Each structure stands twice: as C-alpha cells, then as structure tokens.
Amino acid sequence: MSEEKSLNFIEEIIEADLESGKYKTILTRFPPEPNGYLHIGHAKSICLNFGLGLKYGGKTNLRFDDTNPVTEDTEYVESIKDDIRWLGFNWANEFYASDYFDQLYAFAIELIKKDLAYVDDISAEEMAILKGSPTEPGKNSPFRSRSIEENLALFTAMKEGKYKDGEKVLRAKIDMGHVNMLMRDPIIYRIKHAHHHRTGDKWCIYPMYDFAHGQSDSIENITHSICTLEFIPHRELYDWCIEKLNIFPSHQYEFARLNMTYTVMSKRKLLQLVNEGYVSGWDDPRMPTLSGFRRKGYTPESIRNFCDKIGVAKRENLIDISLLEFCLREELNKTSLRVMAVLDPVKLIITNYEDGKTEELISENGPEESMGSRTVPFSKELWVEREDFMEVPAKKWFRLAPGALVRLKSAYIVKCEGFTKDEAGNVTEIQCTYIPESKSGGDSSGISVKGTIHWVSAAQAINAEIRLYDRLFKAENPAAEEGDFKDNINPDSLQVINNAYIEPSLATATPDSRYQFLRKGYFCLDKDSTKEKLVFNRTVTLKDAWGKEVKRN
Image 1 (tube, rainbow, N blue to C red):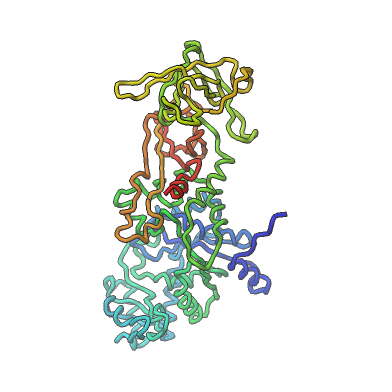
Image 2: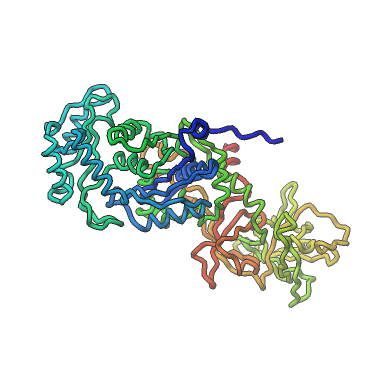
C-alpha cells in the first residue's frame, strides 16, 4: 500500500479553515501581469492555485493585473490564456484589475475622506530621502497635512488629467516611522498618460499593485490569496487597506518561488534576451517560457509532475533542471513513438541485395504493444550514422567495423566487407553483405550479434533540418554570477543539422506528436516546418549528459 502524500502548509491551512467553518468553499486566483510571457516559475503558481481549487472542490479565477498601461499588451493576455489551457487548467472567471478601476477609485476617495490618504507633490528623489532607512525613521512630507477637502479636489484634478506624469501622487497616510518601510506612506495612485489595452484613454491615473491587489481579491471574495515570498513585507499593507475599507477579509499566504539551475526567471532579463537577439523570440525552445517549453516538445503532464515533485515550501532554494528533464523523460519514454533518423549520414551499400528491390519491414512504434507498429522501407542503399563505423575498432566495439557483424534495427544482420574514403580521409561509403535468413521476427540464421544500429532507406528517406537545443546558460546560476548575466550564455546551446535523413513515416508528423529518434533523443516537429522542409527540435537527450559531465570533471 502506497504511503499517502503529506499535506503542504497551505493545504493544512485550507483544511483547518474548512473544518472550522470559516469558509464553506475556497476561491483562489492566479493574477499575472500581462507584460510578458509566462515562464516555468509561473507554472508552479498555476499548478498550486488551480490544483488547490480542484482538490478542495473550490474554484480559481484568472485575473490580469493590468494596472501599468506602459508595459502591458493584449498579445501577452492571449499567450497567458493559451499557456494555462495547455497546462490543463480552466478558470472559473476571467477578470482584470481594470474591471475594478471605478471601484478602486471609490476606495481611494473613501481613504481620503477618512484622512487616511493624501496627495503629495514632492519628487521621487525627495520621497526616497524622506523615507528614511531600515534603522532610521522617515520624515513627513510637507504636504502630508493637507485638508481632506484639498486632497479630494487635487485627486479629482489628477483624474481629470490636469497634471503631468510624476507631478503628483496619492499616498496612504500610515506611519513614517513604521518598522516596515513599505508602510511609510506608500504610493497608492500615480499619474500615467498612456493608452490602456482595455480601458483606452478613460484613465490617466492608475492604482499601484499594492493598492489594487488586496482590494481586487476582496471584491472577488478570494479566500486564500497565494503569493511568493518576496510579498511577505507587502502583507501588512494588504491587511491595512482591507481593514480601513472594511471590506471582505481576503488573506495573503506566501510560498517559495521556483528558482531553477541554468536559467533566469526575471522577466526583465528574459526581455533582454529577446530584444538583443540572443534568442529568436519568447517561444525560443531555449527560453524557460511555457511557450518555449511547448515548442521544444515538453508535455503539460511532465511540467505538472515536476511542480508536484518540487512541492510547496516556505524557504527559497535552487531546483536542478535535471529534475524537470527527468520528469519529461519519464513521460516521453511511455508515450513517444519510436522512429529512425540519421543525423550524421554515411552511405551503406548492401552488395548482395537485389538492385531496385524494396521491402516493407515491420517495426514496433514503442515498448508497449498498444502503441502498435508501422512499416519501414528497406533497400540496397541505406543511410547510417557516421559514428556507428570505426575503421580500427576499439575494445568492446559492437558496431560497424571491417569484418564485424551488426544487426540493422528491425531488419537483417550485415557484415562489414569494406569502405571507401575521399581524398581528405573521410569515409564516404561502407560496403556490407547481408544474411537473408537473419530477418527480424523470423531469424533462422542461428547467428548472435551484440550490436544493433538504426538506419534509413536512402531512396525513401526525407531530408530534414534538425535543431539540437541545449541549455541556454553554461553557469548553474547565471543571475548570481559577477558581471553581465549574458556573459554566461552557452555558445553551443543550438546546433543546426541540415543534412539529416528521416524515415518516410515522419512525412505526416504533427506538432502535437512526440518522437524518440532511436538512440538519439526525443524530438518534435517545429512550427517552422513546411511541406518542402520538415524541421524537428530535440526536446531532451535520452540521458542526462550534463550530469555525466559534472561527474567527469
């Protein structure tokens, strides 16, 4: 009997809340800002929030935190929705912080009327000086003592567009000596004369995240507002706003965000990689974005399994990307179709095979019988991997070499009789004879060989472009390294092969299919493919080559 998985600390809180009757049902939310594409770190939050809703019979809202019109775009909104659906989740309601702009404005007016907010004219530089430090209290702004009537008039004028960006702000009136510096009269509204992707030019003042977030949670009656650890200092302001406005008491809980080796998670850094041309776009298969993982051939199941394995903790740590790749290999090993592709081809001629003859041989699609089989053409001329031939064989070499016997996968045993080189000393052709009685599935030759290699029939082979992707960074924690993080980019993160040959069954490959190119790794069809030129991306190698490299070093 398998051991029941223990609850994480958020699940313990939820179960206690339900048992005590504090809530009849739970409501969580996933609140991305539409200023970029979601990355693997967001996947952890998505799986947590939506997973809790599913586990406890509750619901999860999708709410876009669109309070900064300068950086937000409808393109990002649509990509975020696509990513969530791809991961396998559906939201109960689709909301936007901008849905609540009128209500948030009314909340701000209410705080002003309670003498809990004021309009400030000082510059950002002056404000920073007056804020004090963690060891020294701040000082009041000279505009902190404005009357309620004056603040109402000024805030109305801000809304009507009578001031320039940065000329005035609305601040909460809390305590300039507070031990939490975020509570030292934080800005709750600022002026931004910018076109909003949903509200157009209706507003020129926008609420700050800290003001919009808690109130939006409250408006939606969110029971458990789950954030990452960097929002712990913000919780006090979250609670203060809800208390002073006397609205539904949503509560914030924090968990450790996902930090993963050999990548960066900062949207700012990811945007740099895109804008400066280090990658082809947000969905470049080397990017840690969900669209990048999807294009590379990752499955939603593997990412959900990864998020489940790393769990939910209260302490930051660095997760090894090898765990994500392990979850992927585990999934692809069970589900991917086995096919043959030759990435570094050299011609193999079977000298005693009939000219012009083609056989259709049966080859299994995978380890499970339910995966079925397919036919692959076999003929006199084949493509095989250059690395499968050795002129002077090493010890325990079981592949092609002069005089050596080897089995061709799902076909016959062949004996290497000779080879041809060009003027540069490169092998251009391998000559073999085959044993007709050794056909796979009905071998009566009585010959046993230790090596098996893959191949593709030259006449029917399809020429394809193969993109071998590797980790984008060569440093384990590139963001923590001294200097520019881009100095740690792996120069070998992409190798393009233009002269690969694949078996003809791949002519009908679809973007949703996953393939194991026998002995080469897992691959998927790329969106750049055309009828004239198929392009395949390597999703992941068959084994963890990086782990081996570390051990060797």
